[in-house]
Length: 441
Image 1 (tube, helix red, strand yellow):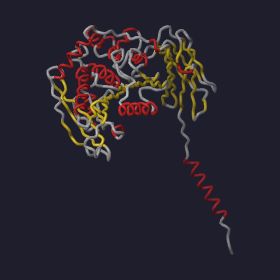
Image 2: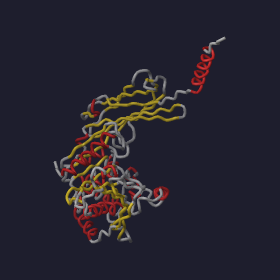
Image 3: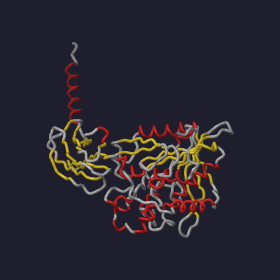
């Protein structure tokens, strides 16, 4: 007698279905989406701005949620704050307007089930008309010319350490270090970095070179291998005078200890301010690149973001050997903005009124990105976003608007303190095309 197994299999299917149902738990994430009501997020002066707000869960708007919103000049105390409850329709916030060029920001927050959610958007009001608040010292050029002479007296004294674990089939990688000026009692220091050189079977082949200057912080580096694989010598440097291949715990300790808030060290003295050695060290890095026998002798570029964006601009202004610049969300831009009631650039030192001494304000002028931007003479590509809370767009436009040389801005409206993949690829392609062709705009 043949028995049917259909009942048995049906039971198994039901059992598995019950197990799946019991084991499955759907977890959604709340999203706060905010956008100004005008395409391009940019308004005329005195034109009213509204922000459209939607709180969603799995793509669906959620009603009955208590949210708070705050609107006002970016990085300043809000002028409009309110608590409301969401509905199944988007919320439209009347944020007012600006009479002067600048940025109006709206921040929305939600507390739900012990978690915090946050969204923001930023409306620009004629950012092309933003002017800097910082001044320019009469001896600005004389100060930096004398400083460069001080650097030129020192030999490069380059040292190479092969890094086979960093190298690839097409790129040879080294940790390098070379001599730089010092500060205070020490008259000399060292700059360390990761050098990546394209491999070739032709001993006479030459390559363009690119200096990658770092964002703020204390960390290790692994080099710009992807661009070296495209046939460009790359040098990625650190700025703190220590090797860049140490254990991360070393950098963690320094970041929390002796190098904490280094960007404000000796801000009251232009000759001993922390960044003097850094700015000159970037020029010394160019000295090193140009000395390499593999360099083509002509095509030198520089790349950096945030602190690195500032260093890219200052280095290009101080060193006429640089032919191409790519600077993203540049720091140290119009840092005195806070003194005049608007957002100042990173390092944000003047947000604290105790730092607003005449000596510190005067020193900052010798290092402000604004005063280097107006001295740029080469083609450049720049990128930043309206939603950057580290380097406020007010400060970045104050510098960008001073550039008289050929310039291209890749503006990511929703971008915070980073580049989008699209911005990064456009920058890399522009650098590769420019450095390899040798063409200038």
